[in-house]
Image 1 (tube, rainbow, N blue to C red):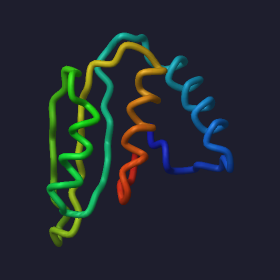
Image 2 (cartoon, rainbow, N blue to C red):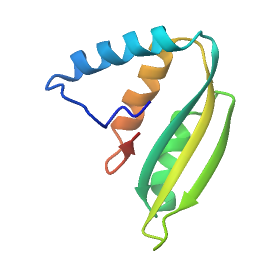
Image 3 (cartoon, rainbow, N blue to C red):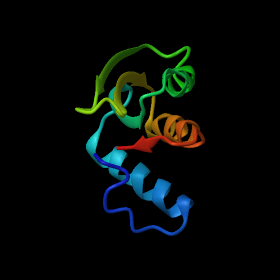
Image 4 (cartoon, rainbow, N blue to C red):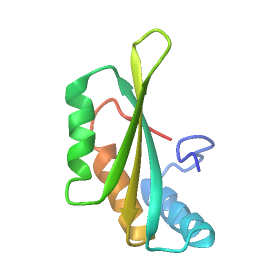
Length: 101
């Protein structure tokens, strides 16, 4: 599920409410959920993202873009509910320069 693509919501609350409905319709929680982010190739930005997931069981997969300018960070984390997914997206969303997929 790409949370950026086709985002027609002007109000973040409406967006997250819609996301919650989609998550609850498509997933049974608790379970592992795949988060995808893109950032400039900057280890400090990756560290900020990883800090959001401290205390949660997760696995990582990173890949540099062809020209090395960007890194895609895939984080498979054990989440308890749709609210937990949204909370994590909101925390990562506060980090400047992160694109959420």
